[in-house]
Length: 357
Image (tube, rainbow, N blue to C red; front, side, top):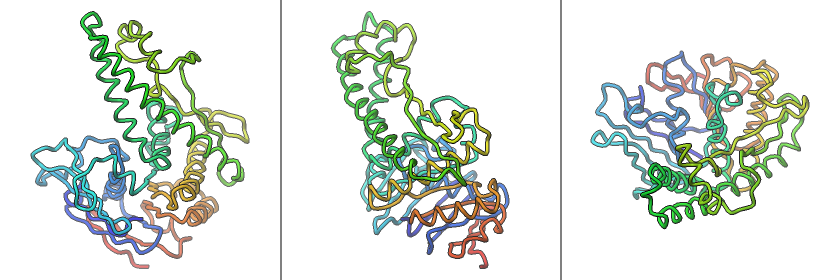
């Protein structure tokens, strides 16, 4: 868990220090005060581009020096990330004071989030659902981020070579396809393991007050039993014509079914879709706690505001039972009245203050 969080020139926070003393960290304040910016900073303590998926240079404070820094103490180890003004698009990471890769952060902390932007998760393109699936998978399989990065790098290189297939070196193409095959198998296996375990955890959940989902991985593959590397070699001409690689785990999609209604999540109401996501996150937190001995850090942006009092109380109870650290935002402190023990903070124009209890 995060014992201390420091921000320097991140978004609208010139400097901020948060020292949580409870499992719940509640951030309240007006819209635009900088509450979600704090959640985004926490999300940057994991591999990837954070909960907004923004460019690094966009995270630096306007009118600031051009760089930013985020540091957190996690179980006695200091994790740090940020950029310097001279190279605003190059992320730097330090773990215990030693330069490291962003993917190595997954060995120390697992972080999952739910934001208002995810309200359309089941309606938008498969890419968003795939990123959500990978975030859940990463919490169980810390090497997942490295496999994903290497797979994507090999795929980009292959796509470039295929733009002029007549001049492309067949041996180099074969080597790239072998890399995609190796890392693609690892990606697919980790995702499948996550889905199987999560469905078992979800099976033990009640249908109320949050809808109970069943999840699956959908693929556009043709059912071929050929290893991925061999399939890619056979499909070079097709992929060259398409201008992209058409087979592989980068084409996976996450399917979610509302069990009680027997209805795909995309056809459910907005409220039901949010309830399905909450059920997935709650079951996942329990699963990760059992697997890693430590639950993930949960970042819930404006989630409480969309729940009636009874469901809000049920959510807080379920979150407390995960035993994890939960960061939540809201415009009204009254949204969190049901919580007796919490670190309560008020955010005002980029400044963070302890709230009166």
